[in-house]
Image (cartoon, rainbow, N blue to C red):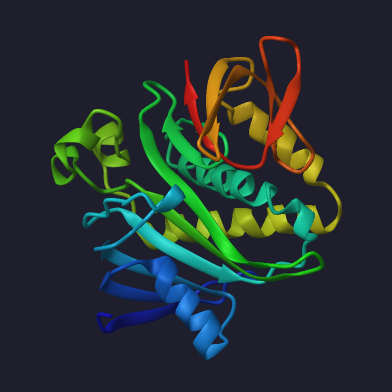
Length: 258
């Protein structure tokens, strides 16, 4: 692991300290080590680059200099049954933060942030942790957003599917203030969940949604299902209406638009 560049602080009950690094393999993996070995909680990690960043299902996440590559470690007081709402809340918090910079986005369930003009991917979320039936012991929220990056910094196959805020606006965004906006939005969302107001989160997410009412495929446990994205359950699962009218719900899966 590279040397710590600096520590900064965040005015939030959710995240108090942010550790800044020049290069890490994966911010999520370092955050997990700090939680499990050092018993630290309520902190964030930012790295200028990652050499082994990963997204859903372990897919390699390209992390060139300029992007926001970070992880948040926390222990929210929520019912484990609401875990499916966490990626939705995180994606919504990113979308709100980007809106403050006049960047319009859409959200693809459960964790992708897309540019609203061309549906190219701006970022994504990965949520890991230790959860029992009764308790959420800890969460690691990985956030990757293409901020101050150029397409030429990414591999050729990836360039056709992604964009960055710099490519969209031609202006730079300071990363730490952006992260603070995301954290503050997350904190408000967790507070809403603690008050039993998760329905408000779902209603707000639907305003940014990019898939409901559209024909999609979901691959879950290596089985592909095709149908209409009907709705979300109160726990954040997606409801798929099959061609025969049956409805099934998924807590996770690889989703594609048709």
